[in-house]
Image (cartoon, rainbow, N blue to C red; front, side):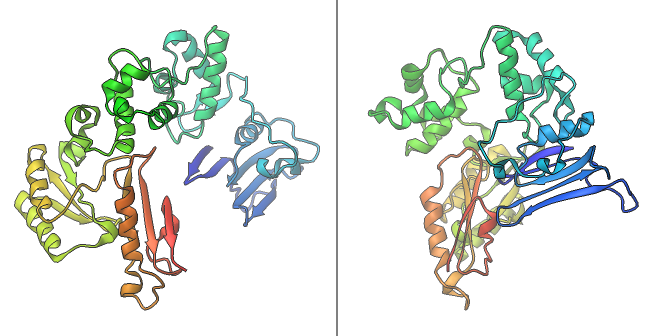
Amino acid sequence: STKLKLLGCDVASFGDNQPKPDDEDVSEMVWDDIKGGIYRKLIFNKDRTKLRGGILVGDAGDYAQLHRLYQTEGELPENPAALLAAPSARTGPVEEEEVSDDPAAQICSCNDVTRGAIADAVKELGVDKATLPVLKQCTKAGSGCGGCEPQVKKILAQELEKLGGSLSNHMCEHFPYSRPELMALIRTDPDIDSVNSFEKILAKYGHGDGCETCKPAVGSILASLVNDVIIDGERNALQDTNDRSLANMQRGGSYSVVPRVPAGELTPEQLIALGETAKKYGLYSKITGAQRVDLFGAAKYQLPDIWEDLGKVGFESGHAYGKALRTVKSCVGSTWCRYGVQDSVSFAVRVENRYKGIRSPHKMKSAVSGCVRECAEAQGKDFGMIAT
């Protein structure tokens, strides 16, 4: 059994969700809401007195409850069909699902971690050391797909309360704020010059010297809010090795270099420069799925020379290593395609140049299709545009 979240869609399964054709002790119920994007199938025994398994797509808010009924062979409602409706489709206010108090209840299905194991780890760590990152590292709960992290957090808060403590949302010991709170404070500060470096932000909103948690976080905030080169001056020390190298570390310690190619547009001079650079430094070349060229196998000491050669023809880093906008893919649009409705290439270039370098919680990819034939696959990206 497992619970995942794929592109914002809940996906979960448990128990015997695909019984064999010759299994006669089976009774199925299916909820298929195509418009709402919800599919649920529950498998019972023939008398519908026992839940044997299920598949939940689009809404798995009651996964823990259903999984517990399956594991414990618990008593079902008088009308088992009451379990089939998705929580978001039930009438009345949606109640937040409670975490089981049973120490044997499975919380993390990826690593088979029970509530009891999490509770014991919190007691062993104590109020001062029991934080969510430390707890995930100790127990492995929440370190797989991440679907159980809200439950792990609830258990941590409950166990800390039993020990006389409370769960803090502080980013680290140096800032008494969460990352979103600190981001909001910096963004709305009336004097931007007083918050344009880590030292100034630490002096104004925190204390101490900083750590490996808050420094990259503040570096990411500054990369989005302050329109300066992120590796200039003291900001360079806040970045990780990929940002400082403008390249992506690969297996074995070598680096890959990915120049930015908005909308996949390349001049003949740029194509030649890519080939000559790869040949000069002995790099493996590969066309990526994002309409760019990736050059693999560069040693760290070669990176400045590589970027100097590529920079001569107008290339810049494509942020293939950062939590930022990676690329905006495009079809050829109305410029060349007989089906094109609008100029998708120039619009994709505008979007990429507008949002490049702005940091985000995760990497972002986009695409622009020049008609509804959708050759740029905009619907499969984090955000996309389709000409109609």
